[in-house]
Image (tube, rainbow, N blue to C red; front, side):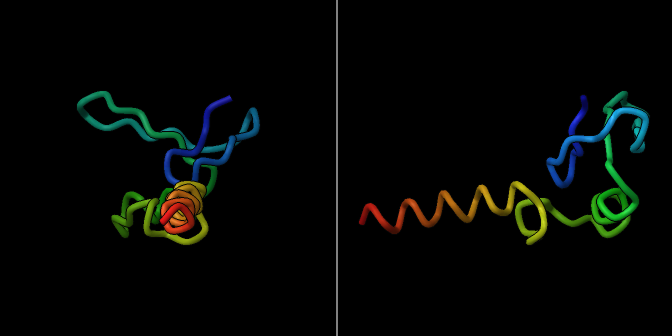
Length: 68
């Protein structure tokens, strides 16, 4: 199953949107929310609180602080 390019969630079979740029780059989106945040609002997944990549970055920062 493909994963959402913005949020990192798995997309159930038979759902989602596929966006293809002119250069052939393909993006899969689970819903309109993640598609709009990436394409129209031009947000980065690492700075958006409800995405998986934000939580991964936050965990890495917390681990670094605990070691010090």
